[in-house]
Image 1: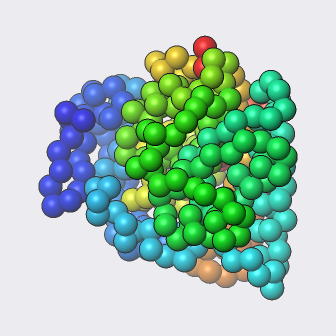
Image 2: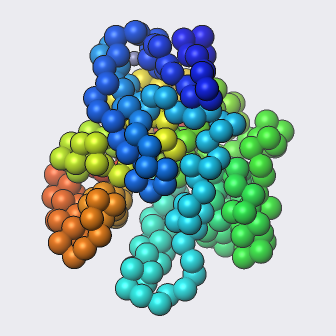
Length: 305
Ligand SMILES: [Zn+2]
C-alpha cells in the first residue's frame, strides 16, 4: 500500500487502508491482555468509517503475538464445565454453519475452500457430509493436528495461488480480520468462486452493543492480531466493489457471551465478572433480535454476481 510506511517493524497507516482518506481519528488504545500487554491505537476513518489497528507488527514480526495457548486450539478433554460447554457450543456451531451454507447454495456435494481452517473441525464436519474440501492454514502445528486427528491435508498460505478451483463456497471463520492483504484476498476469492458461488465471512462487529459498552476493553478488538475491525457498512462497500451481491447476515449469539465474558475476565477473573459478562452478552443478543447487523459477531453471505 502506498499510504503506509514501516518503521522498526511496525506498520503505520498515514491514510485509511480502505478509502485512503487522511482524515483519521484515534478512538482509544487497547491493551493486548491475552499476550504481550502492549497498547495499540484503534483508529477510525472519518470519511468512510473504516476502523483499524495502528502500529501493528509486520507479517514477518507478528508471530510471537500468537504464541499463547488458547489461540491454537482448545484441548479435547472434557473435564470441567467450561470445556463441556465449549464442546457443546462447537457442535452446535458446526451444524449451524453447515446449514446456513446449504441454504444459500445449490446442489449437495459442494466444493468448499476454507481459508484459515485452524485444526480442521469445520472442514472435517462438512467432509463427513459429503463435501469436497480444501483448506488453508498458516499455523504448522494446527495443520499437523488436522492431519493426525482428521486426516486432512491443509495447505500453507504459500500454496493458495496454486489451489485448483473453482469452488461453490469459500469460507473464513474469524479470519479476514487477521489478513494483511485483505483487499487482494477479496479479489482472489472472487476469481476462485463459481458464478453464483458464495463467500462466507464470520467477523466481530464493533458496532454491537457489547462493543459500544466495553469500548477499549472489548476483547474482540484482540490487538495486534486483529488488524481490521469490519462493520456491516464496510462489508457492503467491499462486496459492491469486488463484484459480490450482499445476500444475508446472521447473528452469532454464542460469540456475544464469549466475548463479553472474556472481556470482563481479562480484567479480573472472578464470579462477579463472569456474571457481568454473561449479562452483557444476553443484552447484546436481545438488542440484535430483529437486526443481525447489531450482533457481536456476524456471519455475512456474499454471492458472486
Ligand atoms: Zn476510509
